[in-house]
Image (cartoon, rainbow, N blue to C red):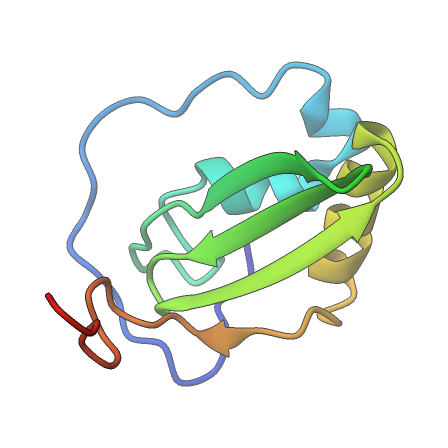
Length: 112
């Protein structure tokens, strides 16, 4: 996996990589993003995470880059189209990444 500019290495992760199965052929870049613990230059990275949910008749995904502290959202009509959109966006570096906000940040609630 190619390392984006401006990211520093993270401590090496221990453990085994999960098997990629059919994803290795069909959604290779997405599979690497979710499972690889090294960049193409050999430096360490934290594998990304993926949250998938259905809302208002649409499939949605939140892709999280733990190393860079960034996230992006993608939506599609079917799960397969969602995977294809994630793959295309990662491979083409065309996803709109945003800095992930920390939990508990923001304005306090009234009365609490």
